[in-house]
Amino acid sequence: MYRPYHPPADPIVVRELTRQQEEMRTRVRLEPLVAEPTLIAGCDSSFPTPDTILSVFVVLSFPKLELLEKVYHHDVVDLPYVPGFLAFREAPNLLRTYEKLQHKPDLIMVDGHGIAHPRRMGIASHLGVLLDMPTLGIAKQRLTGRYDEPAETAGSHTPLLDKGELIGEVLRTKDRVQPVFVSPGHRCDQVSAMRLAWACTKGYKLPEPTRLADKWTQEFKKELK
DNA sequence: GCGACAG
DNA sequence: ATCTTGTCGC
Image 1 (tube, rainbow, N blue to C red):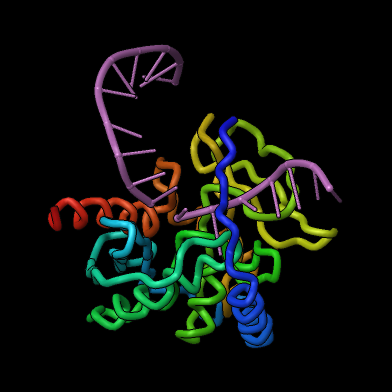
Image 2: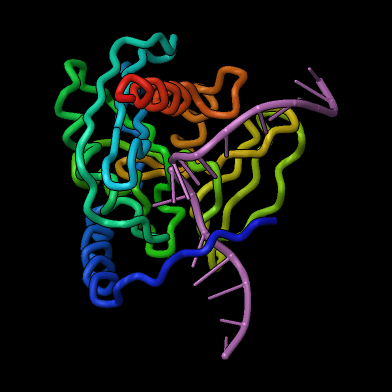
């Protein structure tokens, strides 16, 4: 399989960002959801050009999962992508996008990992702390941790472990389709994250909030061209 | 020292 | 993430 090459990152910058992550990590709270959500948001980003970012937020009713609102924000990006520091590149624009929402969700499903991260600070946790809101992450690829492949049937899942610690779960959302990685971000725990991810799954690989955010991020991008 | 590496 | 056509399987 093809292995991506990651350009070396500035060690000074990496050290500073790591310090910030360690600090934010102390603010993450993993706990059961205080209440069943009524509105769930999904967010995602794309890059029309190498130095611009387009983020989207969609809000769906829960548990019916009807699309109620969708907004986007296009702006410039400063930092490059560095594995483990994705949030510093995308979160600023996601915050500006979030501010445009009329409906304020009870929870946000983010494209990327929550605590399934080397320092337990994936973008879902990062965004959750910044907004002080419940978040959970849905990633299509593994960043860290070990796991056994879940069974071929939709609904099957296996634990994602890192040094013996449970940091997420690998969920097969669709028969014979690559599974997704589910992990809590902030003000949410693994049980709630998995239950909601599955409750939002409607026959596609990605749960609805993430799937629609992903879809509209591509649609809006076309409108800009 | 050698791999691994969300989007 | 992004560049890209047709194509295999359910």
